[in-house]
Image 1 (spheres, helix red, strand yellow):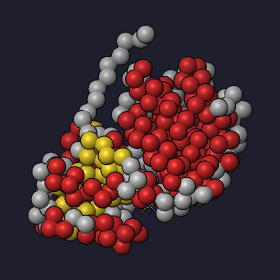
Image 2 (cartoon, rainbow, N blue to C red; image 1 turned 30 degrees about the vertical axis):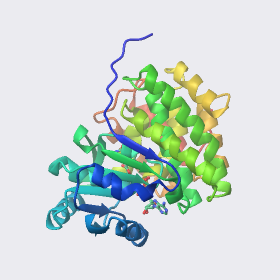
Image 3 (cartoon, rainbow, N blue to C red; image 1 turned 90 degrees about the horizontal axis):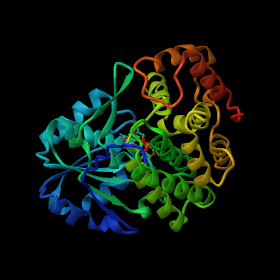
Amino acid sequence: MKDFTYVSFASRVVFGAGSVARLPQEVEKLGAKRALVLSTPGRAADVKRLAATLGERYAGLYDKAVRHVPVEVAEDARRAAQATGADCCVAVGGGSTIGLGKAIALTTGMPVLAVPTTYSGSEMTWVQGFTEGGRKRTQFDPKMLPKTVIYDPELTLGLPAATSAASGMNAIAHCVEALYAKEANPVVQLMAEEGIRALAASLPLIVRNPKDMEARGEALYGAWLAGMSLNTGIALHHKLCHTLGGTWNLPHAETHAIVLPHAVRYNRDAAPEAMARIARALGAEDAAQGLYDLEVRLGLKMRLADLGVPESDLERAARLALEAPYPNPAPVTYEGVLALLRNAHAGLRPG
Ligand code: NAD
């Protein structure tokens, strides 16, 4: 048994089909009287219907959440929170919406109640990514951890198959890196391996039938485990995705899906125990190839080129990724990262 430090933060999790009906009671439990409800523009109509169940505790809807939380949007949302006299935020949506709730919590101390509708895992973390001047940065503060999380698989039935698949791979990426992160510990490793297993089992069923409630529940359970794993630490894979996502404004989950098999291949020899656990959870011989093959089955885009990243930008991406690198099992070199990015750009199966 290696030495480790394990930090856990308290949050209340309510899980189950139909559990969002408990939203008003859960807001009350937080001691809050006026909830600002957050959403992306595309989800605003559905979220408004849900917000109506809050009755007199509904302070207003802010529906301008966008990916990677630009600082200008965070500022605008804080002003809206103030203007409506809100004393808590209810973030209904994916990582973009929950990230916006965290931005409000960071400066106002307002509690966030998260109702995740994707598999990003953000609702379980005290980390937040934001963009400023076209660069993505990460901040950490326990104040940002949602106090309550309602996981209701019914709310995910409308998440399109392709978005579900990509988001599920984003969650698997959290589990994967928790297994070999510098701060890895045996408790989180249990959650991370189980998270990969649950997601790898359920995602193909969801792609076949997005209304499969059993599979939706299993995937959301995997996302919960992934979110808890993410607090442990991240490595080269997340660094690459943050660099690519922030600088080229790429879709977050799709970028994770494309890079993951290649980042795992990069770390194959340096993290054999993690590789064995990933492979076991996938039911595959090899971790990197197993992830790649799962993504092919899910019908995901496999090439960075598919996201519109020009091949001529890869050298710049590799240089940026080497600025302030995260700890990683295999040494991070410019040549190594460039080769990884070239493989991801072409969508090659890891050798
Ligand atoms: P997202 O929140 O941007 O959602 C993707 C799209 O799906 C959006 O258009 C959204 O409106 C739509 N959508 C969400 N739920 C839906 C549903 N049930 N039905 C139909 N459409 C739905 O994407 P995401 O991948 O969940 O989150 C990405 C963002 O989250 C990034 O900014 C990333 O940095 C952040 N993130 C943060 C953490 C963390 O711990 N801090 C973890 C993962 C991701």
